[in-house]
Image (tube, rainbow, N blue to C red; front, side):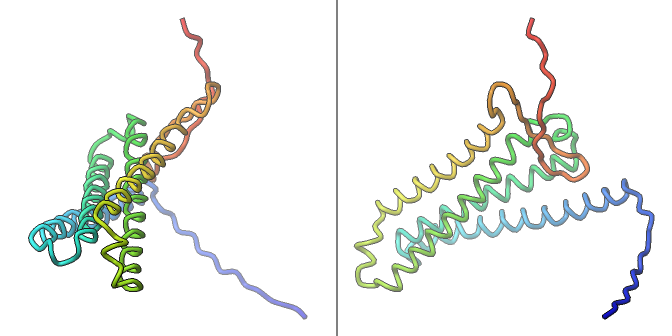
Length: 195
């Protein structure tokens, strides 16, 4: 059995600087729209939850409000970090930008996912145990869970920061690639004697 295969290739010369500029512009527009939607819609969620506190139970309202605040913070951080990246040279000159921003984005992303899981669990209990819901899901327990979720997320963020110094012989740091806007790990291989 014989197979004949023809490979058609075309080459097109692309100016990398122009390609990067198009990517940056598209990324800025996309991120800014997403960030603005996060800010506006979560602000509306917070306002509605404050105006109609009896729309949900107290515990569900607390979870929704916490989630809205976390997602609002995510929108603000992502929106302003992208503006800093595109309009200024701060991320390219200062690797501390990545050390600060990346763990914060991870913190709020994990926190948001965990709060969504808590809301899902809250609704599961409301559906499967409607008569015992108010005894199982109390305001005190929900506050305890929210504090626990925040602490777990914060511990994860601290874990990212501790990766910066793995041990005394191998120093790692974040660096933002100016072409792709991605934070990457760089290893310091030179040692400078201390005076």
